Length: 68
Image (cartoon, rainbow, N blue to C red):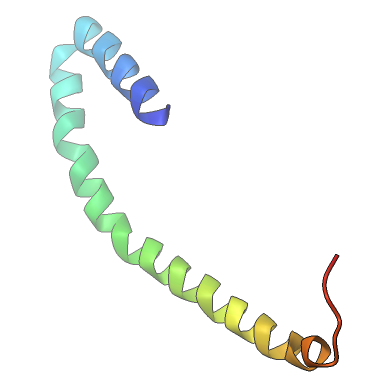
């Protein structure tokens, strides 16, 4: 749905100001590549916190506690 909305807004921008729309076509992939390391760092941080949580709750799970 986000992609469809982005495409629709880009078409409107293309009709109103085509140089800006073409510049956006060039800048968006470059921006996506620049933000990729931050996204990967976020995934690693989230996975690390999930592992710590699993380790902390392991004794309770071994004793038979089941989350609701």
